[in-house]
Image (cartoon, rainbow, N blue to C red):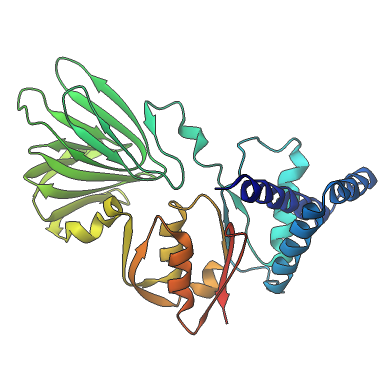
Amino acid sequence: MSAQNASYQHKLKQAADWCALLHSDAPTDEDIQAHHQWLNLHPDNQRAYDELTALWGEFNTPDTGLNGRVLNNVLDNKPPKRHGAAKAFLSIALFSGFGLLLNHLGFSGITADHYTLKGQTQTITLQDGSVITLNAQTQIDVEFNDQTRLIRLHQGEVHIDATTNPSWPLVVQTKDASATALGTSFSVKARGQDTYVVVTESKVKLCYLPQNNCVTGKQGEAMEVEDRYLTGPYPTNPSIRLAWLNHRLVANDISLTVLLESLEAHYPGVLMYQSTELSHIRVSGVYPTDNIELAMKMLASDPTIKHQSVANHLHFISLK
């Protein structure tokens, strides 16, 4: 990213802050004066503010009851300087018909042994020779002792090529479940209290810990703990479920909202859309997770979908 583009993206972030504050119910005279001073500091400040407010206005709707979402990965990880900032963001969300959600790149996980942020993947080799690939927004801790090799998956998704050692089991533990390698290759995904396992080679045992209930899946099968129920194993296609390893996301007649929610973890920018408006649109295709501009162009090829962007950082998706 060029220094000029990075600087303008930072100004867009500042413009979003000002836009939120000034549309809140409590901007002070000092706020208004400081805003004017900021606008006069650089011509790009006025340009960024005008572009952002114009686009927000275009997507304005009187129906403030819509369950909209703005998934915003801001360019810094500093919390608001005052409590009123959060109220301001909520106010502009209601004003524009969008819900506003700030996602700070997953910085809450930086105390983990290994982690990835939005738009990142990482492959690491453990001391036993096992190879782990972390999907975007994933945090893990690694604990080896004489009895077990333990991977604590706090959030996100990992794929593991494990070295086999029956006397030294490799276990991936989530909030309520554990996946024990009985072979070499599998993936585990943690989302809230739910756990999803895909077996790419050999076998894996998945246990729901609160009930001490376990099932074993083999190559080409999946298992899951969802809503406190252990299900599976059932047949699946690992190449589709694990397309993220090749920077791809496979959609097979899914909701556009679900697709955007899946893409957002791979993009360190801003996606703005109304969930309820787009939820009935069905999409299929193979979308790149490492090229959001191309993914948006693919979506915009649908005659019912409208896409606009600012500096390839703010993306607005709606119906035409």
